[in-house]
Length: 319
Image 1 (cartoon, helix red, strand yellow):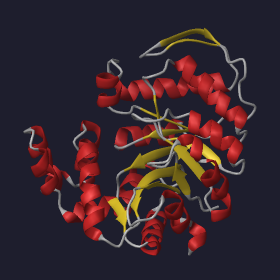
Image 2 (tube, rainbow, N blue to C red):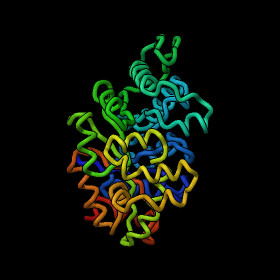
Image 3 (cartoon, helix red, strand yellow):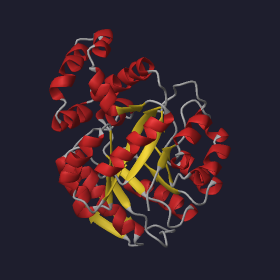
């Protein structure tokens, strides 16, 4: 089954105003709705609403940080969504970034690989209904048991940007989540993950024929993300270190204007899907042909389309 996901909530649309959009997604050919958690809505509330608005959709957060909730609370929230969407929920977890974890939440960003591994192992036991009493390397759980362990334990997928986490996802999880990549990069990621696990990626899609508009928006987004250490390292691994070095140098020097100016058009065109809606759909399918299992569209405002118009125009049923 070919999957085609959408990121919710949409930019510029209040969460409570999503009922019409979400309810229409299955008829447009969307199979999934995925939330996120940075500095807007939390990861779980949009999924709770979507579970009732469109019972056909598969739902998941991409991703929930493993630091910002205790292990037991994370298990409780995930089990709640699994109960609302039985057999249709996938839990995406990951390290997030030092900015979100430490600067915004005041939590040490220590041992990210081990913390993700330990959280994954704990959640497996909790979802199976076991009473967990275990000393992990990065935390301890003493006697926790879910009252409402899911009848169908949800698959767990890991945010993975580099080989170590991709290999962990291949060994112990049910798939991997990545983002900020081009179709050619999918093959590099698959080289570490393998061909069998599900690979999910959020794709930033700006449906406009005005390349200057799309690139201006894309430069702001790239500068905001690629200067974060985890993404900088990701793109160095993918081979964009030299192309992005001038941006990182200007950013580190506090020259935001220059940082934007020195991002090459080729990098923006690699990482932001833009063009007419039909051209965007063709580009999305290039990712799938390269080995991406589940594209998750993050609609970037552009082209004069309303969010609902953009969602309809980018739907697989549109062409």
